[in-house]
Length: 201
Image (cartoon, rainbow, N blue to C red; front, side, top):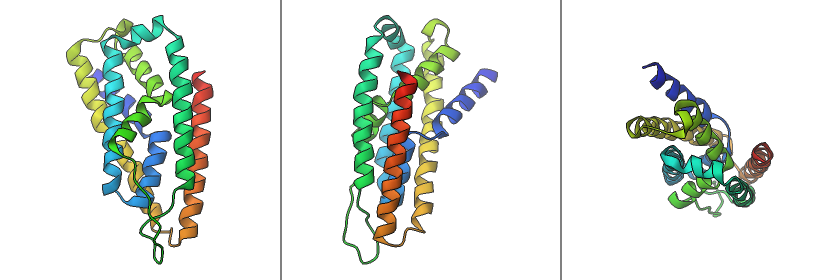
């Protein structure tokens, strides 16, 4: 029971903290509403849990033995997330009075890619496996339980950020406000990506 509680706390602290996936959820919630944010939330959650499972199932050992894989992931992921930051900053609003501008919400696949190419997701997953499973050797039942806990907590945490975006949406009553909000969030996402990049280098 103690380990279960510890896993839940670890999942909550790491999932609810600011990061690329959560920032994108906030922007999408503000621009598109919660329903259209669900594919991003679901894809990002499944993407993270799949990383956690694979690392617990032995991929962590491969990464430790071939350290340049982490560097490759960091560079590719950083470029992808900076591209997303640009798209967020340039995103046009939808459902704004007297505006016919439309925007597309991130897809399920894009949500998964946000995690698979997110250095923070790999760092958190490696930390979780290191903390709760000795020598990265996880018993399958315990690993599956850890993944289930993370699925529930991660989905709920990203949803909180999406709802935050919906709340912010109530004060974004003109296209200019939306554009300024998207620009600010895009810059915040870029700063977060650059910070994560240097932390993982």
